[in-house]
Length: 129
Image 1: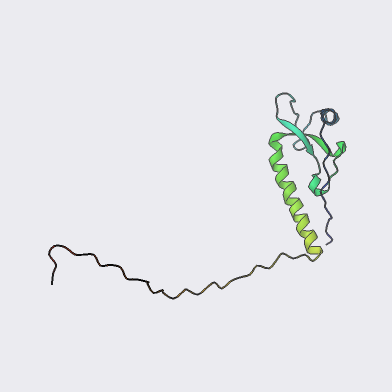
Image 2: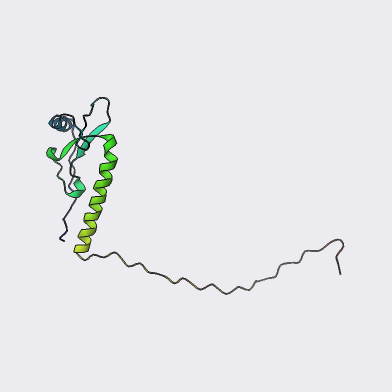
């Protein structure tokens, strides 16, 4: 199966004029869940419908408003798909991960001699013979 070549698209600045233009194009509907966004009460942002890391363009047509609460699920899915695409690309190009050296470890060191022996404490009082 051939790999899908994905690259990261450079991001343009998101000006207030661009945000308004994207909002109006989608009539305030979340591009992730489809629900209506209350622009003054809901936390929202501009989301790329097709993620930049998956080769999506940074154009108004690829952007739309989304609830901030919808972000985590979409981001996790996008990152997972991008990682899989990159793994497939590396495999198709014959790039292998570096081999991990499996060490047998070191044998235990022999017990060491002491440089001096401890001084015996002076025993006071009654001692058994």
